[in-house]
Picture 1: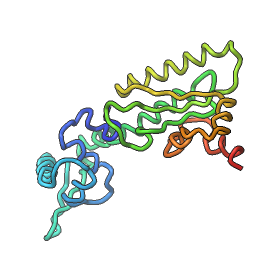
Picture 2 (picture 1 turned 45 degrees about the vertical axis):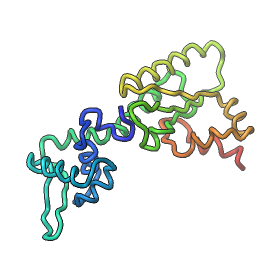
Picture 3 (picture 1 turned 90 degrees about the vertical axis):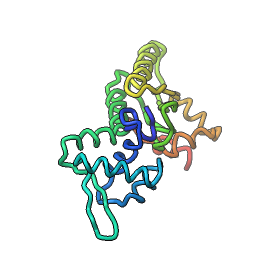
Length: 208
């Protein structure tokens, strides 16, 4: 799945980025505005897409005299599908949070970072997950590894992208903080929490 524009999974043409912009917009936009936000194609190409979508009734066109403003017709039968496709990244994050939240050995913290958190990347990008596990007995290691393995497979099943899981215990986290490991910046800027204690809270005692 293209992590920047998941809608392109099923709408690989210029229509995908245009529909993504329209689904996220709360007011009418000009063709030039849509082109700028879509970051794809040409102004002329975007306008052709808008004209085609308007002909289907999926897009409303408001004529203001010297300009045309386009907006998604949210009453159209297809509109809910477009909105669902536009929100695939949020859906993925919610599904991962639900799975991790149901683990028998709860994660102290879980979040996504990297391309999925920034909203960029492409279909070859990994889905980066940070897991902080509790300091545990060896007897629990197999269960924890099984949970992580299922999570990695879930990412592949849901997106087609590989999962990159960076996991460490609370004790190991303390070691990273003490060494001022630069990977901390990757975890924090930006990240989206899935479950557990906020990462900023886990870092706070060391930063004081």
